[in-house]
Length: 114
Image 1: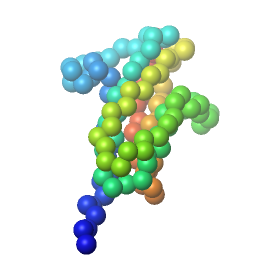
Image 2: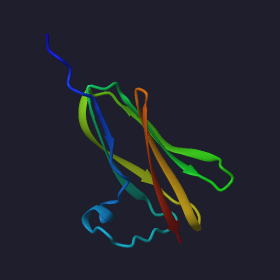
Image 3: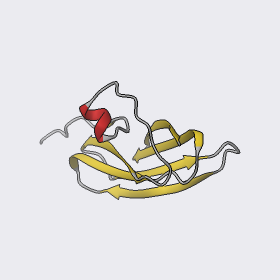
Image 4: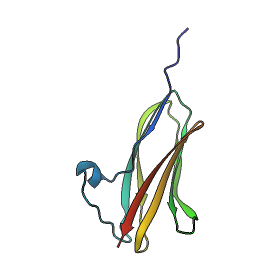
């Protein structure tokens, strides 16, 4: 009888390609300019992953920007998530949530749009 491998569920931070290739760079974002964030999700012997990217507002409401699921049993899956700021803001709060079975991992990105 073969034992199952131990489970693993990891989620990287949300990074743009500029931040990945030039760590420490100060990024400036413009209104109506699409920003692509990259997230890597790894899991071994776990059920599917369900993910959601939301934008939160000062009054605690939020909107879903994108969502989906990954069904592969073993994966190091790279997601690209697009977001376009629509107005000037000093603080934009984005929350990426990945759920795998009973495990929930959240990653936040705070940015400014001019």
